[in-house]
Amino acid sequence: MKKLKFILPILALIVLFTSCNPSDDNPIVDETDGLQKVTEFSNQDHTIEMYTKSGKFYTGYNEISIRIKNNTDNTYFNDYTINWMPKMVMPSMTHSCPKSTINKDLEADSLYKGYLVFQMTSADNSGWSIKFIYTINNVEYTIENTISVLQAPRQRVTVFTGSDGVRYILAMVNPSKPEIAVNDMEVTLHKMENMMSFPIVPDYTITLDPRMPSMGNHSSPNNTDLTYNTDEMMYNGDLSLTMTGYWKLNLKLLNPNGEILKGEDITDNVPSSSLYLEIEF
Image (cartoon, rainbow, N blue to C red):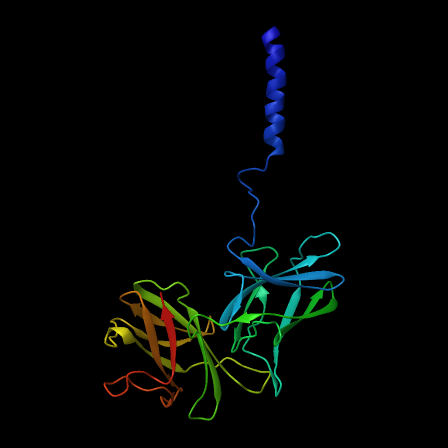
C-alpha cells in the first residue's frame, strides 16, 4: 500500500504533463517557415507584413507573401480582401510595374500571395512605393510606404519594344535554383498599356536557345520553346543545362501569327539574340 501511495501521485503528474503538451497530431505550424520578412507597413489599426524567400526585393519577378496583423492584440486576420499599387516616382515620370492579384494562400491560414515584377532598382528607398487598399469586416483601409529594390545578380527581366510598337516586360520566374538537368523554365510576359497598367500577354510563343559564351557558345539538347499556360497565366518550357557556369538564354518572341516581334536566330555571325535572359550557377 505504501508503494501504491507513492506511485499514484507520480502517475497523476505524468498525465497532467502529457495533457498540457501540444499533441504530436496537431503541431504548431509556422506559416512563414522558409520565408524572410522584407518590410512591414503600419497604420493605427494594422500592420501589413511582406515576406519573400530571400528577405529582399530584386529587379525582376518577386513572389511575395503577405499577412495583416491586428495591432490591438497582435493576432493575424485570415479573411480579408487586399489590392496593391506599386509606383516608381522619377524626376520626369511616374510609372507602375507588372503585378498579379493578391489571393489567399490555400496552404496557410493567414497568408496571402501575389507577385510584382520590378523593372528597375531603388536601393535607397527613394523611388518605389506600394499602396495597399484592403477591406476587413466591410471597412476599407489604406497603407502606403516606400520600399527598397536591389539589382538582381543577372538579367532576370528585360524591357523592350517589339516590332509591333508595343512595350513588353519579360521576366524569369523559374528555375530559381538551376541544376545540371532539364529544368522547368517559367516566365511572365506583360505589356505596357499605359504608365500604370501592365496586363498579361497570352497565347504568344517564346523560342529558347541557351548558350555558354565562355565555352565556344555551345548550346544544349532537349530544350523546348515556352508556350502560354492558361491556368498559371505564365509561359512554360524546358531548359537544359549541361554544366555549371554562365548561360545566356537567347529568346525570340512570336505573336499568334508566327511573326517575330523581337530576337534573332543564333548563327556563326549572330552569337546572341537581342532578347535574352541570364543564368549563372
